[in-house]
Length: 148
Image (tube, rainbow, N blue to C red; front, side, top):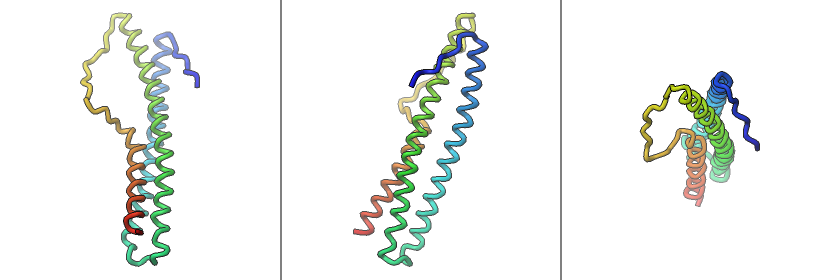
């Protein structure tokens, strides 16, 4: 995949940055809405299964956790794609921001503010991928523990 060319004039750079940020904000909203839908669905399945655990026949009780695993695996795949996409959008926006800073710096305006970097580089976008993996492992653990 080829990189999109970055505009050269300051007005083009600022406009490009604004468009990128609006697109990234809208896309981020969609991603977190999808995350919340999957979370709600998984919680409903967990709640149904654990409240009906004693009432379900033993041979059909395994169906509910299998549905939970299938949905969690689907959630993991979509979450990993969302994470990769957000990372790419973030890198493109950061590249444009650097160009804008450079252009302003060449005109004598310095926007370098002091940013403390954390030792832990854990970003909230990791949750898009990591949380569904934890849910999948939880379901698998429960299936093997409870049904063996």
